[in-house]
Amino acid sequence: MKAMILAAGKGTRVRPITYTIPKPMIPILQKPVMEFLLELLRQHGFDQIMVNVSHLASEIESYFRDGQRFGVQIAYSFEGRIEDGELVGEAIGSAGGMRRIQDFSPFFDDTFVVLCGDALIDLDLTAAVKWHKAKGAIATVIMRSVPREEVSSYGIVVTDDAGRVKAFQEKPAVEEALSTNISTGIYIFEPEVLDYIPSGQQYDIGSQLFPKLVEIGAPFYGLVMDFQWVDIGKVPDYWHAIRGVLSREIKNVEIPGQEVAPGIYTGLNVAVNWDKVDITGPVYIGGMTRIEDGAKIIGPAMIGPNCWICSGATVDNSVIFDYSRLGPGVRLVDKLVFGRYCVDKNGATIDVQAAALDWLITDARHPQPSQPPLEHRAIVELLGNGN
Image 1 (cartoon, rainbow, N blue to C red):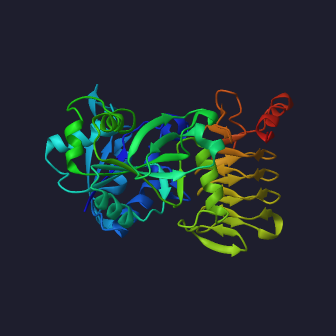
Image 2 (cartoon, rainbow, N blue to C red):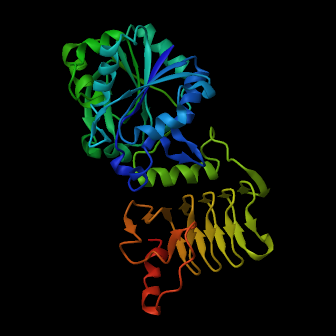
Image 3 (cartoon, helix red, strand yellow):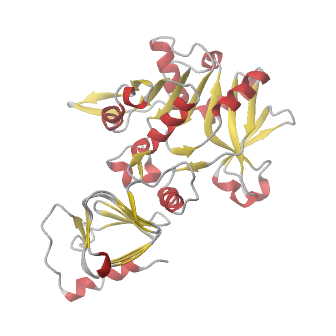
């Protein structure tokens, strides 16, 4: 069976991570989020998968290639152009991406599934497709119900008693929401739906195709299902996803490595004297990372591979990406460290290089910097503020 993964977006709300990593490649404890989607699709018999790519396309293509090692077949539809010898991404919208593939050669010839490439899900796709076919639907959007106080963060889908979609509300105020059912970015389509998507132009599934289907009275349905759905649309979402995996709240993601003590997992060859550090799980420490004596780590926390946590540093409820060095005495509370950037749990970003803090957080492959003047060290309080 055939499916499509939407992977062309720039992921602007997940910056700074997506400056160098496309959103589908964002790692959940060292494994790209899109890899979990491939596993789910394969599990339910979807083994022919199209992926539209644009921003940092080569990162996705070079990792997944033809899909052979994941037990599926993958082909890519690049959206963009070459300018001055460089690839420039130009995404044409989620629906536009579908139409581009079909115009190239009619790939979608039976019921197919479309997934956004930036969410962890454990949906029973087989049951969803069966329901879609029983309804005689041309399109089905998979929904989840959320508490009413959360509706203003999502696109709301309004259906009648039979499940037929009647209207949409984009992030309505709580008092104005006509439903508590949200779109999860998981869709089931019949090939005929492509007739309603114009060729050669930017076109979106949620904001353009779906309202069109409602307008013409097409058999378009919404199905509420109870399943795990972890959207990684913004940096705080990613932070919560890592916490959820480490705390075992997210069930379908295994913590990699070896459990060396209750709640403490490590990759290969971590350099640490366990008797001289203070570590409280759940914590994951990547391979070839050095934790110096006197460091303190309070979970849930993730420290990527090839990192260096200096003596006296504290990592509290934080996520540290690969090749990061935290200087002596640095205290990180509720932070995400990615390269030269430090991000708090609400998404506010500090560029440590521009802020002259690059002696605090450095690339572990660089020589360790000398200590700065005392007046500069006062700025450390910025990072230690967990509010």
